[in-house]
Length: 290
Image (cartoon, rainbow, N blue to C red; front, side):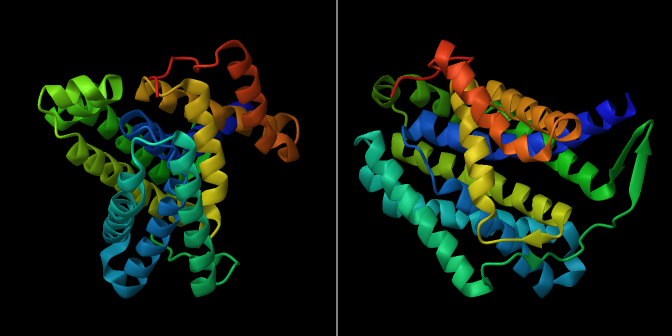
């Protein structure tokens, strides 16, 4: 039982990070009708932006590093939206998919050229001390990562349901033509959506870098594949559904690692994807039409 509870805790920690990245995919696809494959590498750039901030201002701690990650990822997300996504918005989904995939490859290889292909150490922004919660033992870094990601997920839910621009976001996701007819500034909402999703990814990336103690130019690839799978399994109609599927996937991976084999962990996501989409092509909770 102790092993089971420990693996559940580990799964919640990794699943919450999947959820933050997956919501970036879901927001972009719902509002802009694009598959933003550069989003995981915006996450990666946010991680390095936080690293540079922490090394430049060591007195600032985790909060200042996260602010650096937020700004770096948010600015990059805005630049991608203005230069790549906006000119192609309204065209075939495959067109923007290929374009953003090209941006992702450039970001990966550009960062690898700057810092090298191997992981680089991340500043120790939090102590390695352990916290014992009953039979479960987690580090301060793990607890902080979970808390930060859960706060980001709560922010998204509040943003899309409790703010004016969030309600406009949902209106565009449902019927962009009707939203435009009622005076919604579709272009502005699209810009804000990308910036919000990117800024969230930047904050989560700094938390992940602190958790694992390293940053890599190719870290976005793994998170991108898992997060994209979560969006497909859940569908993109309900953001809470995307988050729930991501957390479930993290827990399932942890249980497979603990009870079966760590070599099968990454296969779990795609087995779930195949199984769900065979019976529900629009995802468990449904999807907006493209």
